[in-house]
Image 1 (cartoon, one colour):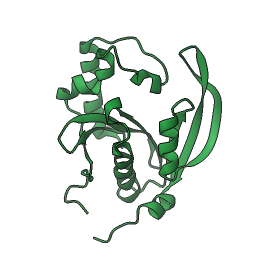
Image 2 (image 1 turned 135 degrees about the vertical axis):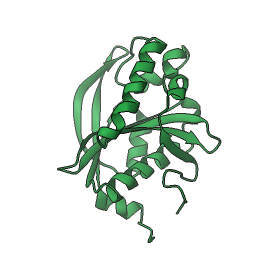
Image 3 (image 1 turned 90 degrees about the vertical axis):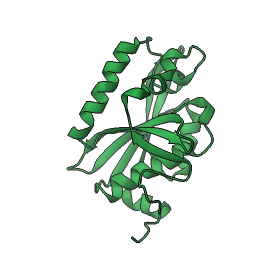
Length: 189
């Protein structure tokens, strides 16, 4: 077990800071990126001021609920992506998350490690009992990632996303805390 809960073997998770504006919203500034292809749609470009405002709102709202944004850094301190939780329902014990990595960092296990750190915290510290995630049908890498983590496919909503001239399905995945414990054996303190 590491001395810092938010540090894994390959990455660390930290809170979003205003200094992250360039890396957090890199896709909006980089004309060569195809990151939007893995989002729900291609978005209009935003001004840096509008992005700063959004980032400030994210930072301010984090202490009000279990919804949180983290920056994912590699072991050298480079921001490689972000992960966030949302739709956190403490009464029922369910939550969702989203994750995005910059393309040069794909395939290094960073997403898998970040997801496991967040699930470990929500299941074992905050007492959530189930996580839900959805993946767009065109995102084969994310589909494989969630299946490799042990998520169960729970449903498919057809033609929910329209981008690049086509409709795509949303694939819904779920994992219970017991299923997570089976793949991530809790270590005694």
